[in-house]
Each structure stands twice: as structure tokens, then as C-alpha cells.
Length: 393
Length: 234
Image (cartoon, rainbow over all chains, first blue to last red; front, side):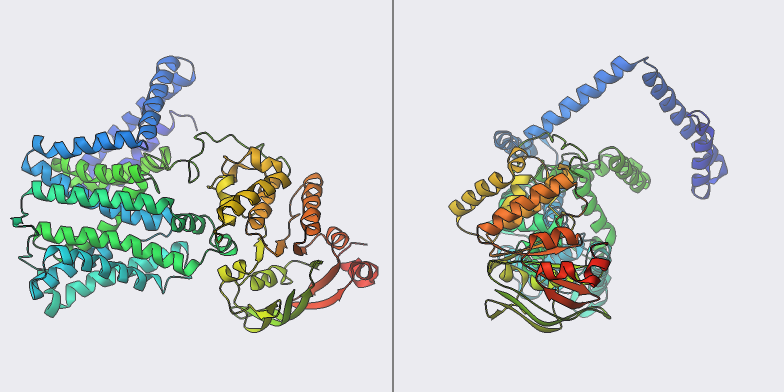
């Protein structure tokens, strides 16, 4: 079918899609709009192909590629990291309370996304119930604080331990599961935790949630301003990044990579799958617990509503969008997916649609994520010379 | 060296191995031939602990290993090269090789062995920075063998090393296997290509529907009418 014959068809299709949502009059406009966009793209494409505009188009593309690979290169450079850290430390002094608060949330999501990245990116285990561990961390602080008056710092340790324990509890029944089956079980696990929190009224106060969770103290200073939490979260993020980075390069990290690539072969070279898989779940969950405790302390109120399946999906999107197994990538993903929705507050209704659209575009145009993990694991060379295809077959 | 005594293994309800007994003597190359689905790969997976056997014993120099985890079996000196050139596609060649030495702690020994396998397969040295998945089929098979050697095995289990490779590449691979054998590593070879297997080994078993139906010297099997008809295509 010629490129132009498709235009009215695509318009009709979008009008049809929008019909149940927008009514026939709006659908007509949506259809027309889509057709127009497709027409413009088709014309542009045809003119590039036929030689018109090839030069500027090529320049734009080349410029873009160069700029991006420069950023990608630098995102792994230690010197730029310290520069970046200084910038981040200075940042809240230039921002209002609201923006600082958004950045605190971003920081919590960075911890969560880096934790999920251990499970999904490093170890290759698709986990759709990750938010459950976040909930475990958050509730362990909320409950221990409101029942026994446990303060923040010890609760941080307890929350992490609880989440890691739940990671192992989830890990044991799924040891022999792979791919889709694993995803389904983790999804179920996430829902179970949420439903328990929602229905166990005596302990968790069900959907009403827990109010008045204690603020953390640093010495005598009570941490309650966004600015305080900003530095708290920043410190925890730095710890997270440091440890996750070390894990990636450790022996355990190599075992995870091997398991991700091919579980049977990993077993054949002597990787203990039971230990490796459970440790991936435990480490991943531990960061969620970390984030959960901080979240409780920051909000002073939590309810099961904060821990829905959609939350798991968003965290997974951060990992995939940013670039699986790439630490700077995952951080960028977490940043974009927290800050962008805030920037688009007026378009609240369209947010899930924009998110969906962005994910589809990403998967088509750049499936490896914004900042992809470097070739191999120890990053010897950036380019991959192709082996003579078919030689020796 | 290695002895299997009446091994039974099930895939769900399918009785895949129905009492397999065989032996690999020190310094010998032993091959196992048989058609598709006879249970050859299941036997290898049972030896290296990935398939948990239902009944029977596997002894490595008198020690029972059938109830051990795969990593403990690798530690005891048995390493498998699985069927179908299964390498780690996104790791570089060098990282693949390092993964082979995953259980070893002697850095200098690992370095030595790295040089050794690169001398066996010089092409791996040339391609050390490339991702495994970008290698050609023959190179991937070489990498899989080299990776197994990195664990410094006493017994190497090979599952169909010739599968889908050009004759010239097969020749190269078997030359290297002969060298490994001469240097004292035991080899247990599973092959569909019966000609190749019988020429290379000192002892051969024939497997059919989960049972060993013959075990003898390759010369004797080559003269047996049943083997000639079923496996040598004569």
C-alpha cells in the first residue's frame, strides 16, 4: 500500500479508537488530526528518501546521535559524577518547597528503580509485584513506630531486613519458574500483600491507613522540611548507587549476569542457582524496604492505596525506559517518570495515555533504553565488530 | 573414573532414562550415540546434576555425586558443554571465559588457563572483546568448549559438538579435543554423527529410548549390523 493511501485509513482507525471515549464529534477531529500528522510525516519521509532534505535531515540525525553518545559516554565517567553530585547538593537552595518535594519523591523512586534493576536488569527476573516490598518497608516503620515508638534509624535497618526476608519468601516458591510464569506469580504476590494490608484492620487499620508516623531525628534536629528530606534521600541514594554499582562488578553480579543470559549454562559452569536467585530477590527487595521507610517518614501517613499494581508498573517502566542494567540509565528513567508527570499536571487525565505512548515509541525506536548498559559487563570496547555471519556454519 | 549405575530419570510422567548404566575409565574417550530423543542429553544433564535422578547412583572415583548440586559437581571436576553452542550471548568472549572459571579462586592459574585456551583456539583471543552472540556458529562452539575448559575439568562432557557445523570447523574442533585428551582430560562425548564419534573414541555406548542397548569397542560396533543400519546409514 502506498504511503499516502494509508493516511485516511490511519485517521479512520484513530477516530474509531477514540469513539467510545470522546463522542463522535471529537473523534472526527482526532481522526483528522492523526491523519494530518501521518500525512506530514509521510511527506517528510518521502522527501528525505527522494533526496530532498536528505542533507539537513542527515545532519540533524548525526548531530543528535553524536550528542547522545557523548552524554552516554560521560554518564559512566567518575569525574562527571562528582561534578553532578556537587550540582545536586546545591540544587535545593535554588528551588521552592514544592520542587524540592518532587525531587525527594524522585530520590525515593531512584532507590526503588535501582533495587528493581537488581532483580530485572542484573538477574533477568521479571518482577511485577515489586511494590509489595516497598509496602513492607513502609508498613514496618509505620507499625513499629506507632505501636512501639521505634525511631527512624533503627527502623531503617528493620525495614530493610523485613523486605529482604519477604524477598526470600517470594523467591523460594518461584525458584523453578521462568519468564511469564514468574511474572504472573510476582504480580499475584504484590496483590496479596496489598490486600492483606487493606483487610487486616486490627493491625493496619485497613484502607484508612496509618496516621501520624514519627519524623526522623538527626541528633536533636527534627527532620520535617522538604529540604531535610532532600539531603536524607540524597545520602541514601548515594549509598544505594555505590552498593549497587559494587554488586554489579562483584562475583555475585557476574553470577546474576550469567543466570540472566542462560540459566542452564550458568548451572553447568557452577553457579548455584538457588543462592543466586534468592540473593537477587533479597537485594532488590532490600532497596524497596529502604525507600518504603523513608516514604513513611516523609509522608507521616500511608495507606494501601500507595502500593497498587500500577506503582509496580511505573517502577518497571523507569527501569526499561532508562535502560535495563544501566545504573545512570535507570536513574534517568526514574527522574523522567517522576518529574515529567509533575510538569504535566494540567494534563492529568492524559498522563497514562502519554506514558503509554512514550513507552511504545521507546520500545520501537530505542529498545535498549535511553542510556544503555555498555557492551558486555566489563566494557572493553564500545563498538561491536560483527563476526563473519555464517562463517563456519 | 565415572560410573553410572541403573539411573532412572523422569520428565513429569515421561520415563526418560530407564536404568542407564555405563562407565568412563581414566584416560578414555567414551562416546554415546543414539537417535533424537533417546535420552543422551538427559544422561549428561543427570551427570552434572541439573537433572535430579529418581533412582540409581552416579559415582565419581567412588564418591556418590548424584545427590549433589551442580556447582559442587563442577567443583569436583566435571564440566559440560551443553548442546547447541549455548554461550552467554551478551557477555564478551573474555567474560564468557571468565565465567567458566567462576568457582576458582586461583587468579594466576585462571590467567594461565586463559592463555592456554586461547592457544587452543586463537580466534577467541582475536575476538575477546566481542560479544559472544556476534560470533559465528563455529566460533561459538569453540567458545563453549573453551569456557568449559576454564574450570580445569578432569572429565569434559560434550553434547553434540559437531551439530550444524561445517566439516572444516568440525575437523578443527576435534583436533583440539584430541589434544585435550592427550593432555590427560577424560572426554565423554554425545554425538549423533556416529562415524565421527566412533572414530574418535576408545569405547562406545548405543542408546535407544532411555536404555543402553550396546556397549563395546568402536571397532566392534562399527561391524555390528544393527549399528551399521541404524546409525551409520549403510
